[in-house]
Image 1 (cartoon, helix red, strand yellow):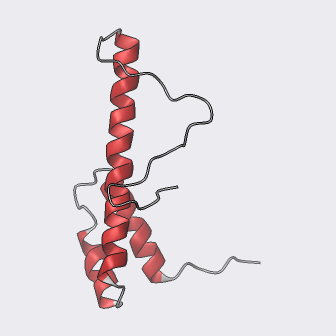
Image 2 (cartoon, one colour):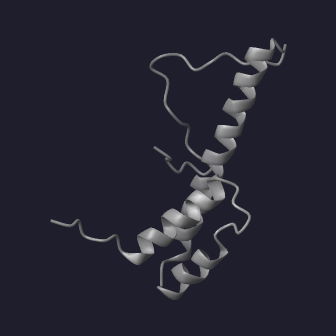
Amino acid sequence: MSQPELHSSIVALISLASGIAAKHPDMGLCQLDRLRSQGIPENQIQAAIEIARHIRDEAAQKLDAAFDEKAGSAAATAPAKEGEACCTPTASGQSCC
């Protein structure tokens, strides 16, 4: 029994967000056109972009902190403690979890 396919707008949102988060050189620009042509509201597209950028930036910060800790840098930040949130909301309050 096969699973139903995801709606093309969901695939485009996933592709857009993952391209941004992964710093892909194409930046998901073709997905933007596809989403807009499908009538996806601009606020939903912008929310996906904001969340993807937040996750990308948060990952870079955590990677830098881990490197600093291993390198013994004075700039090292404390690692996340058990029970802390796995991610923080975006600047506008969008949840990324």
